[in-house]
Image (cartoon, rainbow, N blue to C red; front, side, top):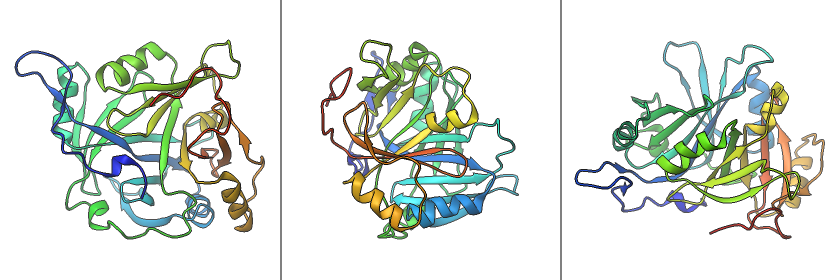
Length: 302
């Protein structure tokens, strides 16, 4: 397993607002999962299972019944969740994203103290979750892994050697108003910018990497996206899988029979990457962890 967020820190909380009795924000450690909708579960299983090599750790019926969510295991604390129910071509494929926290109830209380409506609930897998909506209407969860949850009980299992990557490095989604997003993710939740880039060196940023406060994973703002088609939304609302070598991963995927439209390239961040698309156009970006040439637009911050 990789990623510093896999080690539970001995921290009770991070004080954000001053004064006696100030609410504390619990740590936010990294990406927990991304949940995606599909209208063809068999095709999604082929993409995430056969080609990307992830095992299905378990499936769950959602409250109300009739919809089964499938959990593809990336590592013991990160999953790709796929659920049927995509109704038509105009619907967003992104269901929600989730970050890991150490205390869901504390997160709910902290968010309430900052005026952010938040719902605390127990998930079907046994974890505690706080759910909010960001300024663009995206559903964002903060998940606390509970001792009796399916994830913790299955630690060390369903970790296939065939996994194309062992770590989700970031998730990204469209942001229409950066200032509004910053008020939530930066000012309230403590995310911080570590890089921004764009299609041109002197134009406005198209992407901003916002690192979680107590880990190395990040949320990527996808900016300057206007009236996106469903296919464009799939490109923007994406996940990034970290690999040691994009070239080696590319050859592995070709050997597994995957049809890949575009070969690897060096992105504007100076890193090798390979863009893959699931059957509903959601982008899974394979990326090496370090730049091989100077990034555009801004340096990477530690």
